[in-house]
Image (cartoon, rainbow, N blue to C red; front, side):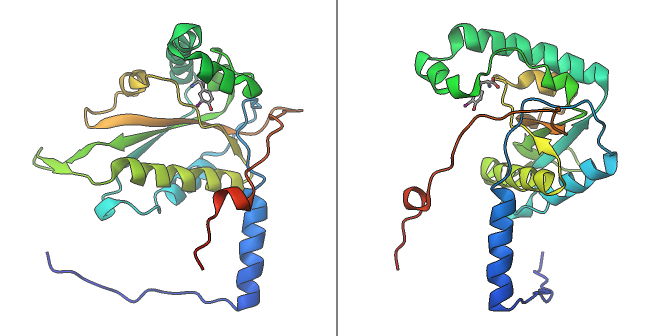
Length: 221
Ligand code: IYR
């Protein structure tokens, strides 16, 4: 295939605008938190569509976009997901997780119970495509699948926050039950389960702080 290039529609800002935009965006994203207490308030489908389409703007290896986002509001499916997730999490919290891991989780007061999987109006389940299957049923390679899908999830969480919604990055383990419940094809593997909605009235979050610049940036000027 011969490459085809088009002009990039670059939008320029003044240095002042750039400083202001970067600081404002930092301030906004710095307010994002993972929430475990959701309201039952509904979220219009159009909002979910917009944040998922935003996620799919992420770069990916060879632009293969190796992802599928399952958007679930069906209460029957949410209930099945909760049941299966709690079964795995019960085992995790009662023997599968190390003492060190359980201790690291103490600040979050988590346990095997996952009511948010039914209370949140939407669950977005992100699947990575280990490989693609073309129209002739042939296997086609994807590249840097974990990196690509991780990038898309980062964009997704930021878009959810920007839209005025809250989310949780939930990782029940193992997650293969999601492939079964959602009837996904063999090439798709569950990557992340993200409840999305509004915070419950009076919702709280753990009192955590983020690492300062000195701990996360090494300058090589
Ligand atoms: N998947 C479990 C345990 C858990 C693990 C990590 I790492 C967290 O940051 C939070 C929880 C659960 O969802 O409870």
